[in-house]
Image (cartoon, rainbow, N blue to C red; front, top):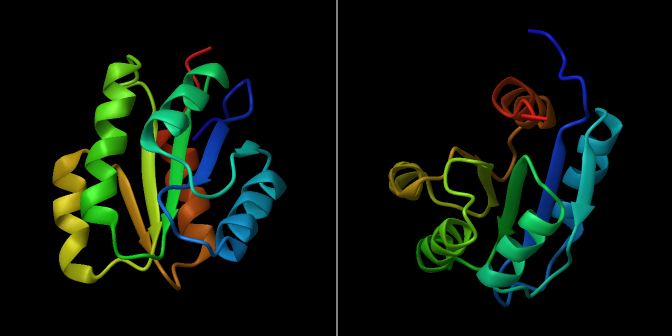
Amino acid sequence: MTQPEFPIKVVVAKIGLDGHDRGIKIIARSLRDEGMEVVYLGMRLTAEQIAAAAVEEDADVVGISLLSGAHLRLVPKLIDALKSQGLDGQVLLVVGGTIPDQDVEPLKQMGVHGVFTVGTPMASIVSFIKERAVPPR
């Protein structure tokens, strides 16, 4: 695999009312350590705010973290918001957090490219993104 000419740009955020952000901050730092450009948007964001930021930041990847159990309700809203911003198929969408095994396949069928549950090794997340998110610049 050849490395992209430009760093992969990743926008990460906490969607919904989840108030715990330690894990996503660790992910963001690890992705930066791997040479990616990472923008952490913060907590309690709406799908529309995340999609607008993805456009503004020219993101290659959008990553969200959910610990609240609302992933089957919030992820479709994010997918719709990304589509409304013209990003359908233009960004790699990854979701992580407390996600039961039985919800992984439904999330993928909705359009999520990668689902990472609690305890996924960081190396797996990094390699997934590097293999699939080559910036089209």
